[in-house]
Amino acid sequence: MEYPERRHLAPFLLRGTLQYQCAQTTVPTPFFHKTLEDTMASKLEALDRWVAEVAALTRPARIHWCDGSDAEYQSLVQQMLADGTLIELNQRTHPGCYLHRSHPSDVARVEHLTLVCHPDEEDAGPNNHWMDPAAAHAKIDALLDGCMEGRTMYVIPYCMGPIDSPLARCGVEITDSPYVVANMKIMTRMGAPAQARIERESSFVKGLHSVGELDPERRWIMHFPAELTIKSYGSGYGGNALLGKKCHALRIASNQARDEGWLAEHMLIVGIENPRGETHYVAAAFPSACGKTNLSMLIPPEGYLRDGWKVWTVGDDICWMHPGADGQLYAINPEAGFFGVAPGTSDSTNHNALTSISHDTIFTNVAVTADNQPWWEGLPGTPVTDWQGRPYDPAKGPAAHPNSRFTVSAKQCPTWSEQAEASQGVPISAIVFGGRRPSLLPLVMEARDWTHGVLMGAAMGSETTAAATGAVGVLRRDSMAMKPFCGYHYGDYFAHWLSFDRPGAKLPKIFHVNWFRKGADGKFLWPGFGDNLRVLEWMIERAEGRVDGVETPIGILPGEGELKLDGLGLDRARLDELLDVDNAGWQAELSAIGEYLASFTPRLPERLHREQQRVAQALEDDAGQSRREAIAF
Ligand code: GTP
Ligand code: SPV
Ligand code: MN
Image 1: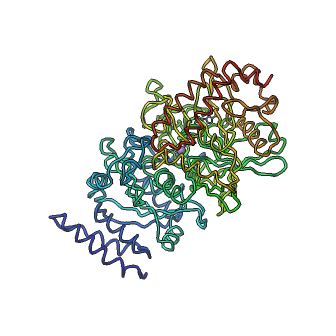
Image 2: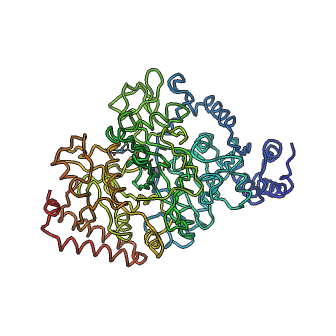
Image 3: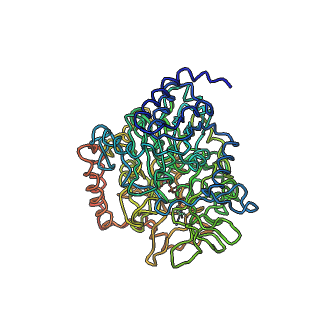
């Protein structure tokens, strides 16, 4: 086979070899010889140079350029089965399914070790951890030095978004983890077509990842937006290691989006087809483990199914939205798979997810039954082995880790939309914000205009979940569900959101939902899951101007009879509680929101501050009123 690329690769390999030899006193491993014999190189000098530089730093025994083929995936699976990285699950019930047990200290994103290294600390904002770029590179390069000795270095070209979409962006992840390669194959358009696009465009995000020693004390996830570079060391888990996902498609992309006038968001994208055959696309931002995957593939309630409603899944976690020539926002899902939360996924809650993961799926940190099927809390049956491989003992906690996950191709989802491949994206009719709020926040409310909607997003709060390390169930602000993912100062981010409101723009309506309000008995008041379609229908009716809603100081709520609740068995008292606007509680909330927003001064847009003041004043003016009187139930 001919390697025309060698011509320009050679000088860089030579330079790499020299650097390597300088750093060694013993005879160096001639890994570059293997590179030339065993692997292809790219047609892009900048890519070859970077790969050679990384190889010189990390000193792998072999370099493998991933072509993204099924044969490559299968051979990696065989290798991981042989060395225990993967465990075969019951191939009769779950063909092509495997279990991976991560290190017990490496089971979630690590926000305190995740850095955004802008040259100017101010640009990272109080919402990010920051380190000076030079100091950060020095710190992580010291860890990366020689970290791949004896191992294979995989070069993964990938494309985020439909391969021919002008809205898609590419990256290359270099990793020493075959588990990461297998996951990236499922989660992105990975391999030869992506490499060809990178060679054409000659621009790509550089991601360097090593599992290192998996030591939480020697773990960093670093982003250098100005250099389109990510470096991740010491974790093999999800958002820490699959660099196309949160690191590229959110932290780096949010910076590119701001510079170029679009939005990179932590949102699902779902198409709702009504009985007339019209499909509206909704984008919704909920924090991690707060229901995006579930909403993106919900099954309509019985009556809706009978009437002919359908739901189409476009994305379950990330949404890139661009203003189109007609002024509307168009969205693509940059991902090709789902890295979904396993616990709670069941026939009754998310039948589509369960169907998707019945074959060709990688499970991480789930439990196993006696006949070797994957198991987690929420499924019928009983586990015999817990997520750490120990005999299941309820005294030791849940059988599956609360942040155990499945990785599956989106194409396996019964509701996968063919529009997910549309290169221009889908038009967005409504944007939804929401979080886990046990009290105060009503089931649904609509912003009166874009500025009010941006305030709703900025004010979002939610109880923390197992998706990140740290305490669970603590209420924290999580503006637009982007607290862990916005790669720059939140004040600038809010200003960027506001900037979409300009002449000619046909912006979607903005809503806020709360599926997680609890009654005095501590139980959820709203049934959630499929029944959330009832709320989505109201939003679409509002977007189309078919229902009026009722104005309150906090926004527009459904008016009498506007939410279709037939067949739900929801009693009046519970509905009243779900839609109650507690004026005193809201005044306190607005004052807390004001304090929170002030923490982004001096970059907080004055317009957002004024909007917070407007709502606070409206509540004061309305004090003593209750919503129930206002809409005369
Ligand atoms: P990430 O992948 O971490 O970004 O999470 P996600 O936002 O996609 O959350 P997901 O849909 O996986 O749901 C997380 C958990 O919330 C699961 O245990 C679900 O069962 C539960 N959940 C989802 N939707 C609802 C709902 O409408 N009501 C209630 N009560 N729970 C829900
Ligand atoms: C999240 O935490 O929001 C996830 C999982 O989607 S991870 O990829 O680990 O970030
Ligand atoms: Mn997520």
